[in-house]
Length: 255
Length: 255
Image (cartoon, rainbow over all chains, first blue to last red; front, side, top):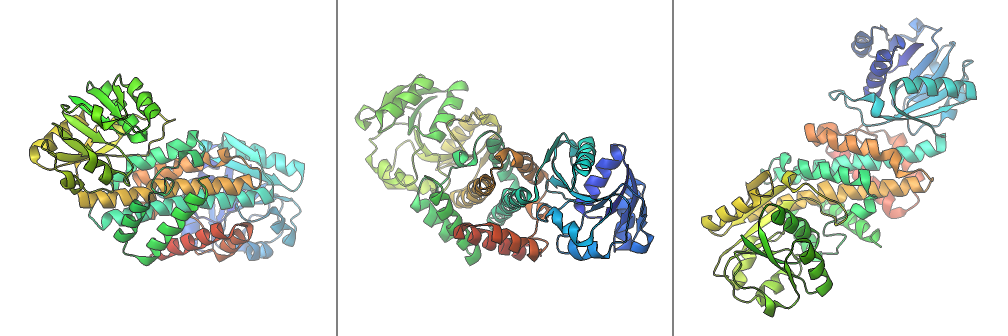
């Protein structure tokens, strides 16, 4: 399968490399930033381009992995091509492609994961959610996704929006809690290492239990003395506010 | 070593069982609720008591594992004994024991972990933080802790307070994010399973990286369109508020 990637960020990098390793032919990497296009193109033996006029118009699939903000305006600028157009965004409905109808049809390949350039990932373990405009395209995208992941499912745009929102809580906000924990520790010169076994168990628990059942700590047992002591320790007003609002929310969910 | 446990909650249960398995002799379990005392006492072949008048006064160590709220008033009620008095609380200073001075001295054995009764834990992997009033007691508590954990450190009361606060962010609040994620998904009938690989990676990342460097998502890249779409999806005003305040905080920490 001949694939063009539009975008060269974290998602594009991990997905392009997984697809290449699975035998797909990545023919071009487009990025408006020339050096970015080169960087990923080198990794997957593709041609780097930064001008849409140089786009190969005869690929089987064009994967748009751009910031959700840019995606709509970018699609309007696309030249006519053969092949399916698919994006990788959790929060963007598939219908977006209707604004600039492509004769090859369209779809979505959404990998639900947190990608950082510095960190290698086993793509086979990543859940991938697929959608297609017609069943033929859906089948093509499902088959392709199954070459790189062991966990591929169909999911409609509306459900995908909720999944993406849930992922922001489960990953982005949970990770920010780790950042705030680190900030609290560094105030006292204690290394973040002290928390790592606790964080490992925090995740391990909810791989088996329902998160509500895994909840422990002063907020769930309404231990006001501990809560007040903690609030006294926190100097930053915004972090104090976060502590209060999350403790209240835990309590509200305790019944 | 002859040990009496005051309390029979999650921490007491896991610690008493680990100590018994490591060869310590748990002689009594005190709980004001008779059935609770029996439950744990049966597991560690100890005598259950629910009346302090029946307390064995010649143990080597009395481990107080009670709610932080109850601990101070309880210590005042304690009869005279031999042996060290130690509590397991993260947020309670060791000095608490000064209010009811015990001739055997006092200390702290704080296991930094999230304990649920339904979930078995490998105690050897749990970080334990120890403090003692005099170096002899500190050495005794360190040695005992090392029979059940591979990661035992000395830590003073003031640092322990910060560690406990950090643990609330790293575990309690992170776990609550998983609860809210589950709530978002259930609105659309999507099973929590879809998020489990993401949660596993969320923790795995910060076992190797600094949490600030692991941060991804719409808030860190200032993707206002996604943020606004998410806010529209959330019906509950309190959860909307949490989304907003955490996105702002991620942004504030992004520099």
